[in-house]
Length: 372
Image 1 (cartoon, rainbow, N blue to C red):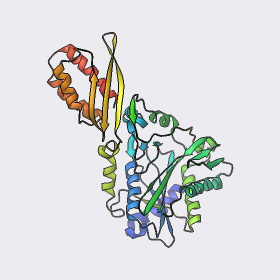
Image 2: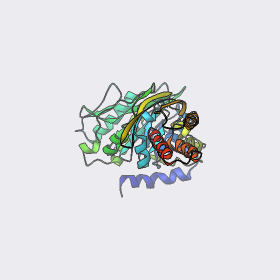
Image 3: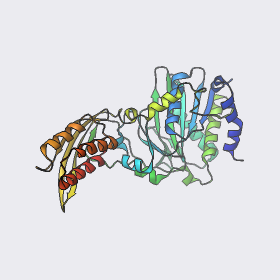
Image 4: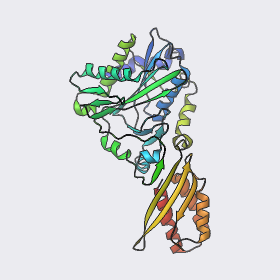
């Protein structure tokens, strides 16, 4: 029986069968919990719940979690600028916006996430990262790992294996970081590369970095070993029992109101609608009848919706009335392929029955949708 199986046997019954007071009432001044879910929205909701509901003055918390493939953007970021949204849709990879700042990260089961909860007064992310490094060194003394002034953890002085973000509330705070163990680096580099050209935004941009998996350095490591080593070091520093309590983020008896928090994090209004205002100034290179047409598109997008729209079409490309109807319909719509597809399909129904007009219309709309 593996270490993770032992943890499951020891702790899962406790979480599911004891009163919810068991969740935070222990003799010591700290608590280590691990999510049984790999859903990014559920795990981010746990962070919100702990931040909003737990008395961190009495008890600090370390939350351990892993996600199925997902891209997580910072609170003030622009998803169109940060990742390849079309590729995410093709690969069925979830997109989430967290409540902390910082840059965009890729999660899969080869990545560990750690969240350190404290009062705002006791918030100290450098100490948390030093704890992680100490745990790694205790497990494998030969590892060359250190914390930088940017609060990253580097392997071999050049490869980033951990990035950091934080949320500081009025009285509570949390600092979370990633730890690259065995993530799919090909998918990571593909999805974190935006194909967008001509986007202007004041949103927080991510800072690209060379990355490496810890397992590339030492193939004998496992995610469970790393989680256990970090939990052990945290327990030692907080003078508490080395216990990992498993929790189910869907358990309303344990975490009252958690479902509402999870649902909010999945909404279009949160993931896309919270994007800071941005503008697009680009040129669509449309191939039509052996020639290439350059169509200039300028848009302002606010709260994820098209606020201003101008499309510089060649003369006589579309009947003036149809062009006006297109611009009018786009204005106020979500900057979103599903909504725009539905919109242009509806307009096509009232379009004159003309094959050439239909093919021009389809070409323009396909290119517009590709922007999103």
